[in-house]
Length: 115
Length: 117
Picture 1 (tube, one colour):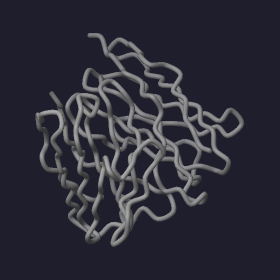
Picture 2 (cartoon, chains in turn blue, purple):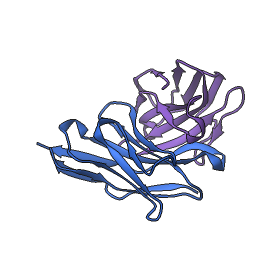
Picture 3 (cartoon, chains in turn red, blue):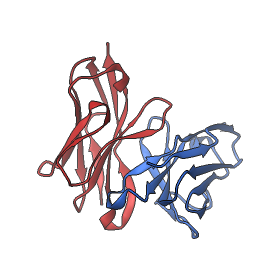
């Protein structure tokens, strides 16, 4: 069975400082991994995806994530936080090769950005 | 990417009534799903909407409570039946587009915010 664990429910950073949102996954196979962002009262937007082509994945709005198989991690980072980054972030795993095409969501990390 | 619309965007309903939520996609998609997001929580999969056949429900969700239809490749409905305050949630549909390939990238609708009094 596949699962994800987001290690922090809340992260608070100052504007202009780095962002690190941590995610560990569990999967029987080589998974597909995603980060989605949900701004208040907005829909879910795909930030980036890992699909085995490259371990360092670049996404939108300056975010990137590194797939580390040895650590079963897929942490999300950004060098410099912006006020507009304040939102809920979800780490998501999927492995369609198991025959299951649905996504399994982590519990979410709320990012606060202080001025 | 696929453009997905949901109707209604929000509703306030009385307990014991039912609400049908529509999901429309602007292109043919391979798979459609329905998720629930309870207040302050993450997303939980309700079911996979199968075109032309009965939906596949996850553990804890049943057809009598959440009947789903998918008459074609671009449209699906989810009904929340005999509602109680515990059904107050955001309901989202998502799709796997034909361009997603093996990697199962999904696109989400804007959600329907349901409040049951």
